[in-house]
Length: 315
Image 1: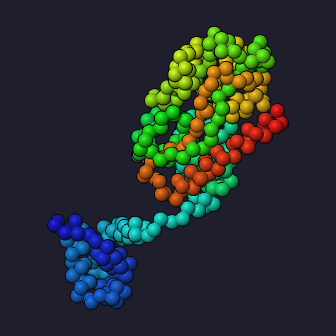
Image 2: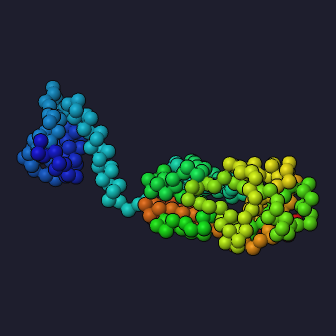
Image 3: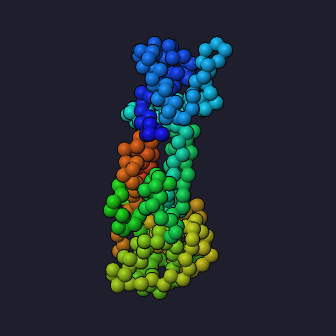
């Protein structure tokens, strides 16, 4: 039994050749070894595996049942060893069948994620993309570390320091109102803003206090949050039917204002710009496939400001 922990590449290669050639002589010739050396190695392999591996048949040697199983295992092991020793392959998006996992808040559903999906479909049509929601129950740090997520997109004021980070886009903070709202044309004063009922999203990560509330608190203000919604996609439909106000980024607001009776008005409080970025773990920092996906996401982010400028020109 002692030999079990001494199965090296040479032994695997001999085992594989013996089982494919089914002959000690041919194995010796093929591997450039002497016949006695191969006989000794077969003996050693028999001790390690506890099986005869090859037995005499009518015309030469034939593999045992276990021998046939070992042939398959030896092939897999040799292929794995070759892959370990080989430098990582370049990522070929056009032929890849990789499944990518991205964590993102549904805030990005309308104007950002569809552009990422479009890019992945066009450049890597056989790859699969799973977008996972970030909720207050998501432990995205553990998911990144374990490889359940490749990338997380977020806008936390203080992102975890041990992760890699790259900025995607910045956005001005504005207010959204239903077009029927009496202040939709006039705009909001600070008094209006603090007196009005506010609509707010549920926090999409437990460690995160809303950037809006944090910023207001720093200026000594507090808004009246009357309704909290689990999905950003519901926001415009609630605004269309109520007297509420929603404070958010311009990209998000502009998307809905284009299609629905929604008005964008300047925020009466100075807010810092919203900063979105992608985060990833050291484990996939140099993985060619994840590097490729990060580049696609970054390019989608880089195109966003042009979209906003176009809307401003057309509007």
